[in-house]
Length: 378
Image (cartoon, rainbow, N blue to C red; front, top):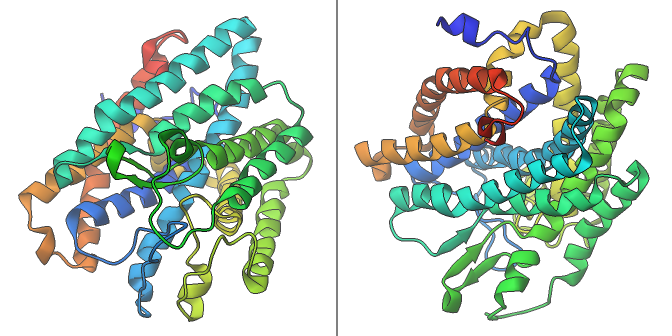
């Protein structure tokens, strides 16, 4: 089968712009992971306590890291919207509510399972022995399972719930000046970090990311109606969030968790990611919504330009697991200590070239499979 045929999107009824946005943020996520595996560079640990990465004015190194921040908020936000779209779509096809809920339970459990059975081995393959890692797949799976309880809520309540979960994360962060051994459940729910006694490392606590999922659900309920009435809805909302980001950063204090301590543009944009600060979510979701608006416009004018990104966006879990092993494998064939940050970009691009046709084949087969097929879960 020709690649052109595999990349055809005409037979689907999905939101092309959202699929393209998902693919867009996945590309930058892959850049960050290629950097982790394939070179020695600054960046990657914007946590609520401890030392911020200091870039010493190296804007190239900072921006390589910064663009990857679009990924995690985008994943959770789009997952929330996708749950709303899938719920409506399957209900229209005659699925019962319990059957739809069971689908989400299966997919959420699968995401959690892949965290420990697939993602963690990929990191270990690249870096050697690691502690038990609770990463983005674990938080996505938990957010989907808990998100089932939010599906029937009206948009306003979803927005309020999402904001409270994100804001209360910062409110509940403890003030500490030294090492504290936090219990497992507190790490998983609220506090990212390493717990040596349990041999576990958490970067994506569930509470704030469930909040982002709730916001995505609210957007999903608003999206179709608002975009039809006002094609600039996503753009206006994105610009509004960027303006709020500027206000939160200029004022300082609440909403930032803490400042990086670096001066200039880098210091202004270097925000806490673990757990996600309000400032991080404002700028990343703002940019994502602006890009979504552009993609929605491009879909009407020249939708074929979005095809490569949309293909990646329609095989997200497949891409995610495969790209980790691919870049880890590349690191075994090279000497990362001798690869500069700029040279790493060539490996990143090579990886995307390898992954695109594989994702095209998978996305095509997934689209052709039955709604009850296990392929629909991946």
